[in-house]
Image (tube, rainbow over all chains, first blue to last red; front, side):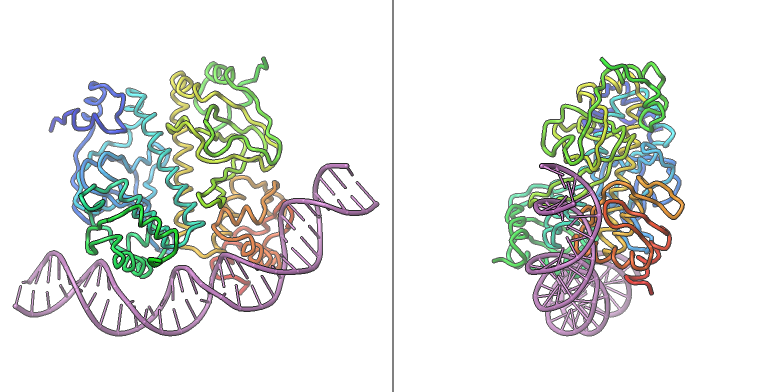
Length: 234
Length: 234
DNA sequence: TTCGAACCTTGCTGCAGCACAAAGAGGCGT
DNA sequence: ACGCCTCTTTGTGCTGCAGCAAGGTTCGAA
């Protein structure tokens, strides 16, 4: 059995205030998991036998509506947990997690969650904070979907992505994993066509760059302003 | 100082698995709070000195967008906690809570939260479940806002309200606190006008009843079906 | 190198739902 | 009991966005 080192996870938000003993105990129950690009780590409705911590890569969490439409809930970045159905008292996963790029994660049996929390109460508190943040974010999205126009929503989605998962490079912020127009459409409640149109305009005005599977926001602030003050560059 | 009795709160979800000693300790720190109709229990952005448990009445949680529009996040019903900024690591309230009807609540100093959790670990677990549920619900709303038409969203909002806060009466489910068209509009991301129009049609078809400040869903199932299969009765 | 599969772009058309406007109805305070 | 005020109803044009359709581009596999 592979020994994993506490230093691997000590700095992560969810494990703040835990001592090395606790970390070791936690790691002892974990099994590493490789998720090839495009495959699911867990699926909507399946029994939630495990919960996960992403170490590397990007996961796309999608929910499928009763009429078959997909909605992109969020991207999971390294250091975040997901699939925590057990923590919220469910025994099936409420959504599907797909690897946007090849990803690496740790998996724990769901049954371990209460035990780990008992051993390390700070874990519960940290998890609650994480949930709280997600809840805030969800509420923000609800507010956006309710009141804002499409292009502003797309701008916000891009900025949020950049903030969470972007890398700062010399000429802007880079999102260097595959985010398709379809993904953006699913995040903002619109269609791929409309997203494409909007982004073409922005690309023409030099606000963003690169089309294919990576994306460069040249000037995040300007992007937001452009979105506020209507479509094109005026 | 008023002695509050554990039986008052023992049955509530958030206090499940707590013994009477714990409940008494918790109650010892609580102060009752009356909130007259229309006034705020706490406000967006204010310092979160307290968190609350609603005992009676209904609270409306609203978020105000940067451009001044209101979005109705949820109604709080008796037995639910709110204003738990402290639990998610914030020191200001992320939204405003208004009394939809005269309400009664218990208030605790925010600083008590970690202490109470320490004394009664189940409290943390229960709170997390509550957060999880809200998160699920928020995601459902995001999915609805993203993919469904207005009337279906309104129907869903009504059904959700009925499920959470309705009373079953002989001829349907009654929502007996003031829910204005404006509220529904703010819940579904549309305008008061559109809601009014939609509900007029439903009222004409006998699916709902009562306009003013209470609402009777005559046949919840039919309502949903009607919303699925397009506007009018066909 | 060629083929195929995703993925992206873009013009056109129609319609759902928003803005604006103005009047009607029930509740509450005095 | 009266009148004010808030909530609601309903009509009419306009517009942002989705749906459709057709063509282009990039990447990966054979």
